[in-house]
Structures are given as structure tokens and as C-alpha cells.
Length: 430
Image 1: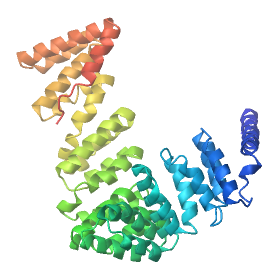
Image 2 (image 1 turned 135 degrees about the horizontal axis):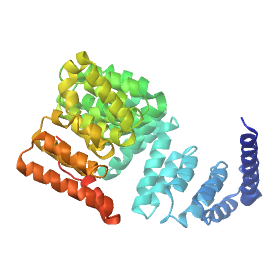
Image 3 (image 1 turned 120 degrees about the vertical axis):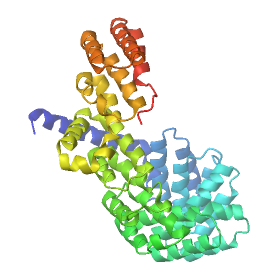
Image 4 (image 1 turned 180 degrees about the horizontal axis):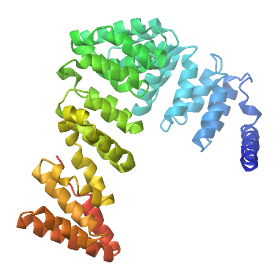
């Protein structure tokens, strides 16, 4: 590390220390989490904290206060929160209700139910139910759920109940309850709640393995939805496990219920490794969903890293054996990558345009290459068009494109607008 880097690092540490001292002095001794408070003192402290306009500082203060929340002072804290019940921030709400639920879930739920704001009431009930079940008090939380007479109220807390149940670590118990919900036609969002809680509890790899053990390919609608949601939410956490599970489920011909799952895996993959995503997609069964994803991935890759995308294309076409087996599929990507090449490297792009099979896509790219080539050398662009021996109607359009390219180069801002119009042309490249 250089001397300059050492000085910068030291300066940042000193600054952080001073900021920390400033924050501590700003918070003051009244927010000491170890201080025992009466209900009246808690009400006053909470009210003071709620006057803090900075969300970070307010949450910081409240978290310190609620660390000392107990059965003796909780009513004071509730009074302090009620004064702002119509305007409560969800984060503040979670801090308060989570702390209360820790020692008295039923009373915390009663408080949430009493709030006049419908939005705040629903958020509060969900928070309490999730924390109640996650704390290990699944039986108590379940009994409360059973006591509800309104199906609307049950729909609000069913998902959080299952999510908290899974968060408690009882994955098997939560899964059995989800299945019961499903079989009785109760809220289907319990599947999503289960998966979210289980992901936090055991991780994506373990959860995917558990769901695969249910043999979703042989199961019904419940197993299918459970698997789709698990792949969708788990792919970002464990891409290897999700992609491996998809391959096993896909078989020789992907089942209809698996439709959409391909995107949940390829999408996150393409964000960090577009080449890897494309290679994996090329190995999947040929169907419209895959073709769309291949083109979308190639389009974004060409914009973010044209050199990398073009290098991959060159490697694929140079490997005659690989291109012979995957050539037709890969050729579908050519219009997508050439669209970007036409603007950045029209001379290279022109060598490939005749390889495009579909007439509409080929015509569009001829015009696009002519337009952007005219920025560099309208004479060479025209010579290329003449050498193609195009129909007169298309040649006329190409000459017009070259003329517009020359004008755009000369006209400054007006030219920039013309470039945008050409660059955003929605002509399909299928």
C-alpha cells in the first residue's frame, strides 16, 4: 500500500471515529439501552425519538430504547407510538412490534389490530405474526390464526405465519402446514411465505434439495408451484443449485408447468456472466422461451461488452464442429449482435449481414449499417451497397440512409436526434 493510500485509510478511520462520537453525544444518555425505564419514561423517550426527522437516527434511537422494552413499560412505548400511528414508518413499526412480540405476542397483535390506519394495521399484523412464529411460539401463533373469524384477516397473516414458522427452523412442520393450506383452498401466498422463510433458515442449496426430494415432476399443482417459487427466489442465492435442479426437471422435453423458470435462472446469471448464461441456454431444449432469453442476453451483453460478445461469436463460428451442431440456434443471435456492431463497427458488421436468414431483419441491418457507415465514409458505404446488387427499392432506401447519416454528422444536435431515432428503431430483428 502506498503512503498516500495509508494516509487516506487513516483519515477515513479517524473520520469514522469522530462521527461515531458525534452520534453517541447526539443520542445522549437518555437512550442508554441498559437503563430501566418506567412506562412514563418510556413514553417520553419514544415521543422524543419519534420527533427525529432523520430515518436513520430515529431508527437508531428506537432500537436502543426497545432493547429495554418489557411488560412494565410497553404500554408507555405504545402510547408514544400511537401519537404517530397514521404516519408510522414500516421500519419503526417493525422495531417496536418485534421487540414487543419477543415477550408477549398476543398483546402485540392486539395493539396492531387496534390501529386506525388500514395500511399500518395490516403491516403491523404481518410483522407480529411472522416474529411470533419465528420466535418458536408457533403453537400460540397458530391458535391465534385459528381464532380469526374473518377470511380477510386470515389472508393477511397466513403468509407471515408460515414464513415465521420456517424461520424458526421447523422446515418440515411449516411445509406440512403449507400443504394443508393448499388442500383446503386457503391463501396460496403461504407457498411464497414458506420459501422466503426457509431460504433464510436453511439456505437455497438445502431448500432446493428438499423440494427436489418431493419429486415435483411426479407431483401435482402444489409441488409445481413450490418448485417454481423455490427456483425463482433461490436462483440469486445459489445459481449452481438452481440451474442443476432445472436441468434435472427439464428432461428431454420441458413440462408445461416449468414454463417461466428458465428466466428466473438465466436472468440473474446474465447480469454477472452473460457468456456463461448463453452457453447454458444453448444446452437447453429448443423452444420460444429459450430463444427470447438468448436474444435478450445477447442484446444486453453487446451493449455492455461488445468486445466480449463479438469475441465469443468469432470463437463459435471458427469451431466448425460446434457450429455445425448449434449453428442454427446461434445464427438467431446474429441480428441482435450485429445491431450493435452496425453502429460501432459497421465495416466488420457488413461482412456478416448476408448471413441473416430473415429478409426483414437483413433489410433493416443493411440500412442501419449504411447509415452509421456514412458517418465515417459515405463513399465506402455506397460502394458496399452497390456491390450487394440489391433490388432498386432497397437500394433507394440505402442511399437515403447514407444521405441521412452524412447530414446527421454535419448537423450537430439535429444529427444526434436522428441517431437516436435510428438507434431506437423498433423494426424486429427476428
